[in-house]
Length: 232
Ligand SMILES: [Zn+2]
Image 1 (cartoon, rainbow, N blue to C red):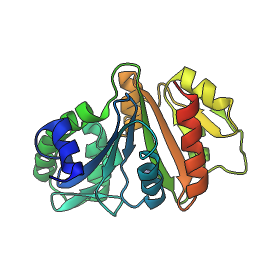
Image 2 (image 1 turned 90 degrees about the horizontal axis):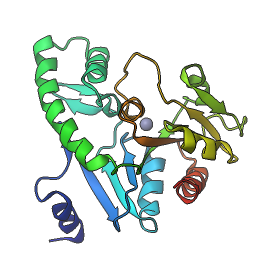
Image 3 (image 1 turned 60 degrees about the vertical axis):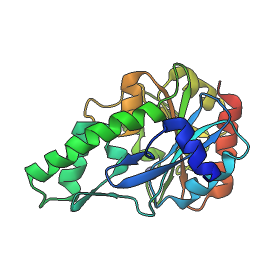
């Protein structure tokens, strides 16, 4: 067995983690409660930064094995960061696959409900632990989040593509004292979009999303290092 398959067998003792037909790999370093997720396959900078980070930092990282943003879902596709609730997945399936029948969508939901439950068992940290998602953007910025945020800290107004989104007020307050941009979304809009931030807020899980422009590896590395050093 390779080291990686030994690690995976050690964690799950059976098939590797997957959502529908897309597999995820796991990188474990020590036993820390910290969890990391890379979910959008086309966000290469975030993947490289996270893989390098796990060589020197304790925790468990889950990374999508895909090179595209969307994952296959039956004959169609789905945004993997809209699959964290049935409601969000339904909206994403409808938006991306207007010709898909209700029967097809329901078959996908049945598989997704099982995969989501198993995935969350692996992904969610033990009580009080921190979950960090790492993303890249190509246009989206903190400006898009301000209207639906509870609080904001625009500490780097010239770098709106680089920001943290936190769900836990004490984490937000620590990040707000940094040189970086941040928003707090502890409730979020009533409308559930199926994103992990919405689920984390609902479950009371400490969640921080780190967003940086695609290609900004140095700043993303710096912000991730700052985060893990300064948050409990
Ligand atoms: Zn993303």
